[in-house]
Image (cartoon, rainbow over all chains, first blue to last red; front, side, top):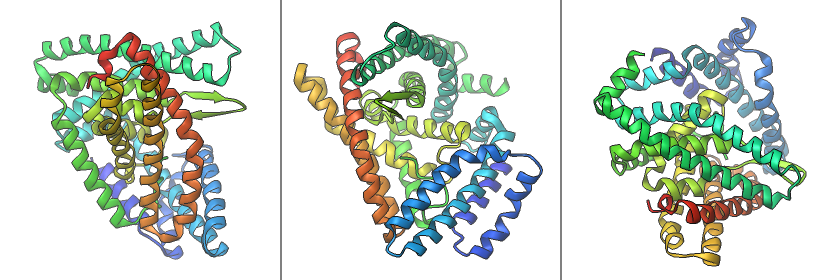
Length: 190
Length: 199
Protein backbone atom coordinates (compact mmCIF):
# COMPACT_ATOMS: atom_id res chain seq x y z
CA UNK A 1 0.00 0.00 0.00
CA UNK A 2 2.77 2.46 1.06
CA UNK A 3 4.76 1.66 -2.10
CA UNK A 4 1.77 2.43 -4.32
CA UNK A 5 1.04 5.71 -2.51
CA UNK A 6 4.71 6.72 -2.74
CA UNK A 7 4.72 5.89 -6.48
CA UNK A 8 1.58 7.95 -7.03
CA UNK A 9 3.01 10.93 -5.13
CA UNK A 10 6.23 10.67 -7.14
CA UNK A 11 4.27 10.43 -10.43
CA UNK A 12 2.13 13.42 -9.49
CA UNK A 13 5.17 15.50 -8.54
CA UNK A 14 6.94 14.68 -11.80
CA UNK A 15 3.76 15.30 -13.82
CA UNK A 16 3.41 18.79 -12.39
CA UNK A 17 7.08 19.76 -12.77
CA UNK A 18 7.85 22.14 -15.63
CA UNK A 19 11.37 23.19 -14.70
CA UNK A 20 14.20 21.22 -16.30
CA UNK A 21 16.49 21.55 -13.26
CA UNK A 22 13.78 20.19 -10.93
CA UNK A 23 13.18 17.31 -13.33
CA UNK A 24 16.91 16.56 -13.22
CA UNK A 25 16.72 16.28 -9.41
CA UNK A 26 13.64 14.07 -9.64
CA UNK A 27 15.39 11.80 -12.14
CA UNK A 28 17.82 10.57 -9.44
CA UNK A 29 15.43 7.82 -8.27
CA UNK A 30 14.74 6.27 -11.73
CA UNK A 31 18.44 6.60 -12.60
CA UNK A 32 19.26 4.61 -9.45
CA UNK A 33 16.78 1.92 -10.48
CA UNK A 34 18.40 1.78 -13.93
CA UNK A 35 21.96 1.64 -12.57
CA UNK A 36 21.12 -1.05 -9.99
CA UNK A 37 19.51 -3.18 -12.71
CA UNK A 38 15.99 -3.10 -11.24
CA UNK A 39 14.78 -2.25 -14.72
CA UNK A 40 16.47 -3.12 -17.98
CA UNK A 41 17.03 -0.25 -20.47
CA UNK A 42 15.56 -2.62 -23.10
CA UNK A 43 12.13 -2.33 -21.47
CA UNK A 44 12.21 1.41 -22.17
CA UNK A 45 12.73 1.00 -25.93
CA UNK A 46 9.02 0.64 -26.78
CA UNK A 47 7.91 3.76 -24.88
CA UNK A 48 10.79 5.76 -26.34
CA UNK A 49 9.75 4.85 -29.89
CA UNK A 50 6.34 6.30 -28.97
CA UNK A 51 8.11 9.28 -27.38
CA UNK A 52 10.05 9.93 -30.59
CA UNK A 53 6.79 9.98 -32.58
CA UNK A 54 5.25 12.30 -29.97
CA UNK A 55 8.23 14.72 -30.04
CA UNK A 56 8.12 14.81 -33.86
CA UNK A 57 4.35 15.41 -33.85
CA UNK A 58 4.56 18.19 -31.25
CA UNK A 59 7.46 19.98 -32.95
CA UNK A 60 5.63 19.91 -36.29
CA UNK A 61 2.24 21.00 -34.92
CA UNK A 62 3.34 23.50 -32.21
CA UNK A 63 3.14 27.20 -33.20
CA UNK A 64 6.93 27.51 -32.75
CA UNK A 65 9.08 24.47 -33.74
CA UNK A 66 11.63 24.83 -30.91
CA UNK A 67 8.90 25.23 -28.24
CA UNK A 68 7.22 22.05 -29.46
CA UNK A 69 10.56 20.24 -29.38
CA UNK A 70 11.22 21.41 -25.81
CA UNK A 71 7.70 20.47 -24.61
CA UNK A 72 8.02 17.07 -26.29
CA UNK A 73 11.41 16.45 -24.67
CA UNK A 74 10.08 17.41 -21.19
CA UNK A 75 7.06 15.09 -21.61
CA UNK A 76 9.34 12.28 -22.84
CA UNK A 77 11.58 12.72 -19.76
CA UNK A 78 8.52 12.64 -17.47
CA UNK A 79 7.17 9.51 -19.20
CA UNK A 80 10.52 7.70 -18.77
CA UNK A 81 10.85 8.70 -15.11
CA UNK A 82 7.29 7.78 -14.13
CA UNK A 83 7.34 4.56 -16.15
CA UNK A 84 10.60 3.40 -14.53
CA UNK A 85 9.38 3.95 -10.96
CA UNK A 86 5.94 2.52 -11.79
CA UNK A 87 7.52 -0.56 -13.43
CA UNK A 88 9.73 -1.29 -10.41
CA UNK A 89 6.81 -0.88 -7.99
CA UNK A 90 4.48 -3.09 -10.02
CA UNK A 91 7.19 -5.73 -10.53
CA UNK A 92 7.63 -5.93 -6.76
CA UNK A 93 3.89 -5.95 -6.16
CA UNK A 94 2.55 -8.26 -8.90
CA UNK A 95 -1.14 -8.76 -9.67
CA UNK A 96 -1.78 -10.53 -6.33
CA UNK A 97 -0.12 -7.65 -4.46
CA UNK A 98 -2.28 -5.17 -6.34
CA UNK A 99 -5.33 -7.18 -5.30
CA UNK A 100 -4.17 -6.80 -1.66
CA UNK A 101 -3.83 -3.03 -2.19
CA UNK A 102 -7.37 -2.83 -3.60
CA UNK A 103 -8.69 -4.72 -0.57
CA UNK A 104 -6.83 -2.50 1.91
CA UNK A 105 -8.19 0.62 0.17
CA UNK A 106 -11.69 -0.53 1.22
CA UNK A 107 -13.03 -0.29 -2.31
CA UNK A 108 -16.53 -1.66 -3.01
CA UNK A 109 -16.64 -5.46 -2.82
CA UNK A 110 -18.18 -5.62 -6.31
CA UNK A 111 -15.16 -3.81 -7.79
CA UNK A 112 -12.70 -6.14 -6.02
CA UNK A 113 -14.66 -9.19 -7.22
CA UNK A 114 -14.67 -7.75 -10.74
CA UNK A 115 -10.88 -7.33 -10.59
CA UNK A 116 -10.24 -10.87 -9.25
CA UNK A 117 -12.60 -12.53 -11.73
CA UNK A 118 -11.31 -10.52 -14.70
CA UNK A 119 -7.76 -11.69 -13.93
CA UNK A 120 -9.05 -15.26 -13.56
CA UNK A 121 -11.11 -14.92 -16.75
CA UNK A 122 -8.05 -13.79 -18.71
CA UNK A 123 -6.20 -16.93 -17.59
CA UNK A 124 -9.14 -19.17 -18.52
CA UNK A 125 -10.03 -17.60 -21.85
CA UNK A 126 -6.51 -16.88 -23.13
CA UNK A 127 -5.87 -20.48 -24.18
CA UNK A 128 -9.27 -20.77 -25.89
CA UNK A 129 -8.77 -17.47 -27.69
CA UNK A 130 -5.30 -18.44 -28.93
CA UNK A 131 -6.47 -21.89 -30.07
CA UNK A 132 -9.43 -20.41 -31.95
CA UNK A 133 -7.22 -17.86 -33.71
CA UNK A 134 -4.58 -20.44 -34.64
CA UNK A 135 -7.17 -22.86 -36.00
CA UNK A 136 -8.80 -20.06 -38.01
CA UNK A 137 -5.39 -19.12 -39.44
CA UNK A 138 -4.62 -22.74 -40.35
CA UNK A 139 -7.99 -23.29 -42.02
CA UNK A 140 -7.81 -20.09 -44.05
CA UNK A 141 -4.23 -18.80 -44.36
CA UNK A 142 -4.82 -16.56 -47.40
CA UNK A 143 -7.89 -14.42 -46.92
CA UNK A 144 -8.78 -10.82 -47.68
CA UNK A 145 -8.62 -8.19 -44.94
CA UNK A 146 -12.44 -8.04 -44.70
CA UNK A 147 -12.68 -11.83 -44.27
CA UNK A 148 -9.96 -11.62 -41.62
CA UNK A 149 -12.07 -9.07 -39.71
CA UNK A 150 -15.11 -11.35 -40.09
CA UNK A 151 -13.13 -14.30 -38.68
CA UNK A 152 -11.89 -12.13 -35.80
CA UNK A 153 -15.46 -11.09 -34.96
CA UNK A 154 -16.72 -14.70 -34.96
CA UNK A 155 -13.79 -15.83 -32.78
CA UNK A 156 -14.60 -13.03 -30.33
CA UNK A 157 -18.28 -14.07 -30.40
CA UNK A 158 -17.33 -17.68 -29.66
CA UNK A 159 -15.11 -16.67 -26.75
CA UNK A 160 -17.92 -14.46 -25.38
CA UNK A 161 -20.24 -17.48 -25.48
CA UNK A 162 -17.66 -19.57 -23.63
CA UNK A 163 -17.34 -16.80 -21.08
CA UNK A 164 -21.04 -17.26 -20.24
CA UNK A 165 -20.50 -20.98 -19.57
CA UNK A 166 -17.56 -20.17 -17.28
CA UNK A 167 -19.51 -17.42 -15.54
CA UNK A 168 -22.22 -19.95 -14.62
CA UNK A 169 -19.58 -22.19 -13.01
CA UNK A 170 -18.08 -19.19 -11.22
CA UNK A 171 -21.50 -18.10 -9.95
CA UNK A 172 -21.90 -21.54 -8.36
CA UNK A 173 -18.38 -21.33 -6.88
CA UNK A 174 -19.09 -17.88 -5.40
CA UNK A 175 -22.42 -19.07 -3.89
CA UNK A 176 -20.72 -22.13 -2.36
CA UNK A 177 -18.17 -19.84 -0.69
CA UNK A 178 -20.93 -17.82 0.94
CA UNK A 179 -21.51 -15.04 -1.59
CA UNK A 180 -19.12 -12.22 -2.53
CA UNK A 181 -17.83 -11.55 1.00
CA UNK A 182 -17.05 -15.22 1.60
CA UNK A 183 -15.47 -15.45 -1.86
CA UNK A 184 -13.27 -12.41 -1.21
CA UNK A 185 -12.14 -13.77 2.17
CA UNK A 186 -11.28 -17.06 0.51
CA UNK A 187 -9.43 -15.33 -2.36
CA UNK A 188 -7.59 -13.10 0.13
CA UNK A 189 -6.42 -16.03 2.23
CA UNK A 190 -4.87 -17.79 -0.83
CA UNK B 1 -5.89 6.24 -27.64
CA UNK B 2 -4.09 5.92 -24.31
CA UNK B 3 -2.92 9.21 -22.82
CA UNK B 4 0.48 8.56 -21.30
CA UNK B 5 1.78 9.88 -17.98
CA UNK B 6 3.26 13.35 -17.73
CA UNK B 7 1.04 15.09 -20.30
CA UNK B 8 -2.13 16.21 -18.49
CA UNK B 9 -2.19 19.11 -16.05
CA UNK B 10 -2.98 18.63 -12.34
CA UNK B 11 -6.49 20.06 -12.68
CA UNK B 12 -7.27 17.77 -15.64
CA UNK B 13 -6.06 14.76 -13.66
CA UNK B 14 -8.30 15.73 -10.73
CA UNK B 15 -11.36 16.36 -12.91
CA UNK B 16 -10.97 13.11 -14.86
CA UNK B 17 -10.48 11.08 -11.66
CA UNK B 18 -13.67 12.63 -10.24
CA UNK B 19 -15.52 11.72 -13.45
CA UNK B 20 -14.19 8.17 -13.33
CA UNK B 21 -15.16 7.68 -9.67
CA UNK B 22 -18.68 8.89 -10.51
CA UNK B 23 -18.84 6.64 -13.59
CA UNK B 24 -17.56 3.55 -11.76
CA UNK B 25 -20.01 4.01 -8.88
CA UNK B 26 -22.85 4.53 -11.40
CA UNK B 27 -21.79 1.32 -13.16
CA UNK B 28 -21.54 -0.69 -9.95
CA UNK B 29 -24.96 0.56 -8.80
CA UNK B 30 -26.49 -0.71 -12.05
CA UNK B 31 -24.71 -4.07 -11.96
CA UNK B 32 -26.38 -6.80 -9.93
CA UNK B 33 -24.29 -9.35 -8.05
CA UNK B 34 -25.35 -12.01 -10.56
CA UNK B 35 -24.27 -9.85 -13.47
CA UNK B 36 -20.86 -8.87 -12.05
CA UNK B 37 -19.46 -12.34 -12.85
CA UNK B 38 -20.69 -12.22 -16.45
CA UNK B 39 -19.30 -8.69 -16.76
CA UNK B 40 -15.88 -9.84 -15.48
CA UNK B 41 -15.64 -12.68 -17.98
CA UNK B 42 -16.90 -10.62 -20.91
CA UNK B 43 -14.38 -7.96 -19.89
CA UNK B 44 -11.62 -10.63 -19.95
CA UNK B 45 -12.67 -11.65 -23.47
CA UNK B 46 -12.52 -8.02 -24.66
CA UNK B 47 -9.17 -7.53 -22.89
CA UNK B 48 -7.70 -10.50 -24.79
CA UNK B 49 -9.29 -9.44 -28.08
CA UNK B 50 -7.82 -5.95 -27.81
CA UNK B 51 -4.33 -7.47 -27.54
CA UNK B 52 -4.67 -9.36 -30.84
CA UNK B 53 -2.77 -7.87 -33.76
CA UNK B 54 -5.21 -7.86 -36.69
CA UNK B 55 -3.47 -7.76 -40.07
CA UNK B 56 -5.05 -5.27 -42.47
CA UNK B 57 -3.37 -5.16 -45.87
CA UNK B 58 0.35 -4.51 -45.41
CA UNK B 59 0.04 -3.26 -41.81
CA UNK B 60 -1.60 -4.45 -38.60
CA UNK B 61 -3.50 -2.87 -35.72
CA UNK B 62 -4.95 -3.48 -32.27
CA UNK B 63 -8.69 -2.86 -32.03
CA UNK B 64 -10.17 -0.90 -29.12
CA UNK B 65 -13.60 -2.64 -29.33
CA UNK B 66 -15.24 0.28 -27.52
CA UNK B 67 -18.60 -0.15 -29.27
CA UNK B 68 -18.95 -3.92 -28.71
CA UNK B 69 -18.04 -3.37 -25.04
CA UNK B 70 -20.73 -0.71 -24.69
CA UNK B 71 -23.37 -2.76 -26.53
CA UNK B 72 -22.71 -5.96 -24.54
CA UNK B 73 -21.83 -4.61 -21.10
CA UNK B 74 -24.28 -1.70 -21.11
CA UNK B 75 -24.26 0.35 -17.90
CA UNK B 76 -21.56 -1.93 -16.39
CA UNK B 77 -19.01 -0.68 -18.90
CA UNK B 78 -17.33 1.90 -16.59
CA UNK B 79 -16.08 -0.57 -13.92
CA UNK B 80 -15.17 -3.10 -16.64
CA UNK B 81 -13.05 -0.56 -18.56
CA UNK B 82 -11.48 0.67 -15.30
CA UNK B 83 -10.34 -2.85 -14.35
CA UNK B 84 -9.17 -3.64 -17.91
CA UNK B 85 -7.08 -0.44 -18.09
CA UNK B 86 -5.68 -1.04 -14.59
CA UNK B 87 -4.53 -4.48 -15.74
CA UNK B 88 -3.11 -3.08 -19.00
CA UNK B 89 -1.12 -0.54 -16.97
CA UNK B 90 0.15 -3.18 -14.53
CA UNK B 91 0.88 -5.96 -17.01
CA UNK B 92 2.03 -4.05 -20.10
CA UNK B 93 2.77 -0.49 -18.98
CA UNK B 94 0.12 1.02 -21.31
CA UNK B 95 -1.12 4.33 -19.89
CA UNK B 96 -0.33 4.52 -16.18
CA UNK B 97 -1.84 4.79 -12.71
CA UNK B 98 -2.07 8.56 -12.59
CA UNK B 99 -3.77 8.85 -15.98
CA UNK B 100 -5.99 5.82 -15.32
CA UNK B 101 -8.82 8.22 -14.50
CA UNK B 102 -8.45 10.11 -17.77
CA UNK B 103 -8.13 6.97 -19.89
CA UNK B 104 -11.10 5.30 -18.19
CA UNK B 105 -13.23 8.41 -18.63
CA UNK B 106 -12.52 8.84 -22.34
CA UNK B 107 -12.95 5.17 -23.27
CA UNK B 108 -15.81 4.18 -20.95
CA UNK B 109 -17.79 7.35 -21.62
CA UNK B 110 -17.62 6.79 -25.38
CA UNK B 111 -18.74 3.15 -24.87
CA UNK B 112 -21.58 4.23 -22.60
CA UNK B 113 -22.76 6.92 -25.04
CA UNK B 114 -22.66 4.32 -27.84
CA UNK B 115 -24.83 2.04 -25.69
CA UNK B 116 -27.38 4.78 -24.96
CA UNK B 117 -27.60 5.93 -28.58
CA UNK B 118 -27.32 2.71 -30.59
CA UNK B 119 -28.22 -0.32 -28.39
CA UNK B 120 -31.99 0.12 -28.77
CA UNK B 121 -31.80 0.73 -32.52
CA UNK B 122 -29.56 -2.32 -33.05
CA UNK B 123 -31.80 -4.54 -30.89
CA UNK B 124 -34.93 -3.60 -32.86
CA UNK B 125 -33.35 -3.74 -36.32
CA UNK B 126 -32.38 -6.66 -38.52
CA UNK B 127 -30.57 -7.29 -41.80
CA UNK B 128 -29.09 -4.28 -43.56
CA UNK B 129 -30.31 -1.73 -41.03
CA UNK B 130 -28.61 -3.70 -38.19
CA UNK B 131 -25.36 -3.68 -40.20
CA UNK B 132 -25.61 0.08 -40.77
CA UNK B 133 -26.44 0.89 -37.13
CA UNK B 134 -23.62 -1.34 -35.84
CA UNK B 135 -21.14 0.19 -38.28
CA UNK B 136 -22.17 3.66 -37.12
CA UNK B 137 -21.91 2.54 -33.47
CA UNK B 138 -18.36 1.23 -34.01
CA UNK B 139 -17.22 4.37 -35.83
CA UNK B 140 -18.98 6.68 -33.35
CA UNK B 141 -17.33 5.03 -30.31
CA UNK B 142 -13.82 5.44 -31.70
CA UNK B 143 -14.32 9.01 -32.89
CA UNK B 144 -15.95 10.02 -29.58
CA UNK B 145 -13.05 8.45 -27.67
CA UNK B 146 -10.54 10.34 -29.83
CA UNK B 147 -12.55 13.56 -29.48
CA UNK B 148 -12.66 13.25 -25.67
CA UNK B 149 -8.91 12.54 -25.58
CA UNK B 150 -8.34 15.55 -27.82
CA UNK B 151 -10.53 17.72 -25.56
CA UNK B 152 -8.47 16.78 -22.49
CA UNK B 153 -5.24 17.58 -24.34
CA UNK B 154 -6.66 20.86 -25.67
CA UNK B 155 -7.83 21.91 -22.20
CA UNK B 156 -4.37 21.11 -20.77
CA UNK B 157 -2.59 23.35 -23.28
CA UNK B 158 -4.09 25.11 -26.33
CA UNK B 159 -0.86 24.47 -28.22
CA UNK B 160 -1.78 20.77 -28.31
CA UNK B 161 -4.60 21.58 -30.77
CA UNK B 162 -2.39 20.93 -33.83
CA UNK B 163 -1.54 17.47 -32.53
CA UNK B 164 -5.22 16.91 -31.66
CA UNK B 165 -6.23 17.54 -35.30
CA UNK B 166 -3.67 14.96 -36.39
CA UNK B 167 -4.98 12.51 -33.75
CA UNK B 168 -8.53 12.88 -35.06
CA UNK B 169 -7.41 12.40 -38.67
CA UNK B 170 -5.53 9.19 -37.78
CA UNK B 171 -8.64 7.84 -36.04
CA UNK B 172 -10.91 8.20 -39.11
CA UNK B 173 -9.68 5.00 -40.88
CA UNK B 174 -9.51 3.20 -37.52
CA UNK B 175 -13.14 4.11 -36.82
CA UNK B 176 -14.19 2.57 -40.17
CA UNK B 177 -12.30 -0.61 -39.26
CA UNK B 178 -13.98 -0.76 -35.84
CA UNK B 179 -17.32 -0.15 -37.54
CA UNK B 180 -16.79 -3.17 -39.81
CA UNK B 181 -15.78 -5.43 -36.87
CA UNK B 182 -18.76 -4.23 -34.80
CA UNK B 183 -21.12 -5.01 -37.73
CA UNK B 184 -19.72 -8.55 -38.11
CA UNK B 185 -19.89 -9.16 -34.35
CA UNK B 186 -23.46 -7.85 -34.04
CA UNK B 187 -24.60 -9.97 -37.00
CA UNK B 188 -22.93 -13.05 -35.47
CA UNK B 189 -24.51 -12.38 -32.05
CA UNK B 190 -27.96 -11.75 -33.57
CA UNK B 191 -27.76 -15.17 -35.26
CA UNK B 192 -26.15 -17.20 -32.48
CA UNK B 193 -26.75 -15.51 -29.11
CA UNK B 194 -29.09 -12.48 -29.35
CA UNK B 195 -29.42 -12.37 -25.54
CA UNK B 196 -25.97 -10.69 -25.45
CA UNK B 197 -27.53 -7.57 -26.97
CA UNK B 198 -30.49 -7.49 -24.54
CA UNK B 199 -28.67 -5.56 -21.82
